[in-house]
Image (cartoon, rainbow, N blue to C red; front, top):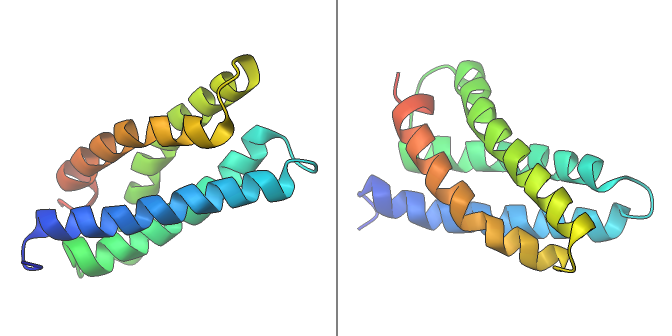
Length: 126
């Protein structure tokens, strides 16, 4: 069962999603009186992207290639996806009555699909 890359991606993706979600919510509620929402989201995404890279590299794609180049490619994929998510979060939390935690939950399906396809075709496929 765990020999299938897609199954591993889903399992690790679940762990990464939960980690990223709770890190983001934790940073938001811990730092909201000190930093702007955009700064908090940027910081949280750096933590989440780095954790996700490690778990995907080691447990899903199991590549032996250069760590730095793959990390940069990984960060490029997640960085672009994160920018879209950050902007959506900022707009929806600042200009609607949708709670922050719900906005984050609504954005997750988009990021999961886009990042899986990007990592499969770009990050770990060289």
